[in-house]
Image 1 (cartoon, rainbow, N blue to C red):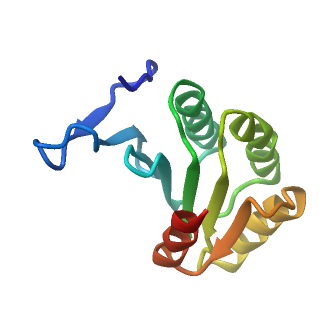
Image 2 (image 1 turned 135 degrees about the horizontal axis):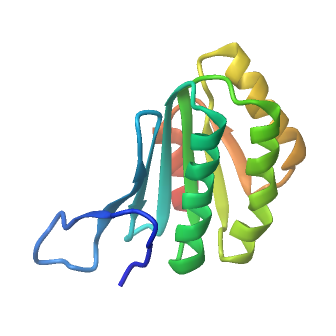
Length: 150
């Protein structure tokens, strides 16, 4: 059973004959949706527009809390349409990477944003998280293809 307590979780069985594959929405608001694919053990964060610091950190915490209670091997962070992230929030996101890796995270893929200022925010994350476990892509298709091989 998947565990996550702070928020209700929407679970969708895509094939009623196969209860081993579950797609669930772990966290959602106007600026981010975090989904879990049980077959791939993958969280996907889809960011849209500018997100307030408080909401950004709640989403990061939701990711960590879910990973602490469930097997998450890979994460896609789709920042294609994300607004600028404050440096202190980028630092906060960096600070949780050791926890995620300690809980079994094998790799994380970022989809590079269109907005040049958001690209700079992401570059700050990249500068702090120099690892072959983190890669950057121009599309979710490319990001997922890489993670499928990890």
